[in-house]
Image (cartoon, rainbow, N blue to C red):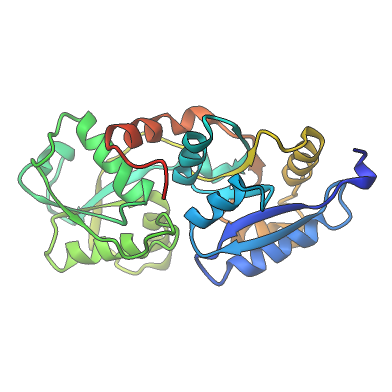
Length: 275
């Protein structure tokens, strides 16, 4: 297959916010005239998207870290991560409490209430439980207040994390587990100045990536990745798309070591590989 005869790659993405449409229209425009062009299809949840990828209905899926793990487990490892955002390399989970609550770390939560986000959110539910166990906290030592307010979106909307924060402010929980991006958004928008404080930060882990089956033609995969990584933050039109999609400056090659903790958490918590 030559570059001139390459068919466009079809990318799947989950429509978790209205901004998804202009983001992917902008990326599609950026790929127009490239060695391999791009079109996209939107899904309502990650289960449907992964099913479509494994069935060959789409070429590439823009997956969360949990969708990546499940894709690996369902295929026996016959998938590949193509690229990710620079912000996906150093994702973190934070434990937050009311200001002045004087929590020094996770072990101070013994006998207290911790609000978790949607059970399919790696950053706000799955990994927090994993890290608590790693701190030596046994199941049942903390009262987990689970808030499943955006199931299927893997926490992308941030709604369940904001609901967890609300539980703290309403005294229905003593602390909440949230993603660092949610904390940054609260700070930037000055929604609750001085009301909350961070008392623990997780190790870095990876979040989203572009996932493809390992049967995707290498020349198509390479052309897609090369053109994606060439997006230029100095170009105003391209910068707008990059910033809308949550990048600092550019797309990067994946760091698969950053998913180690989530694979361990999924196994330890016996989370199904299927939806």
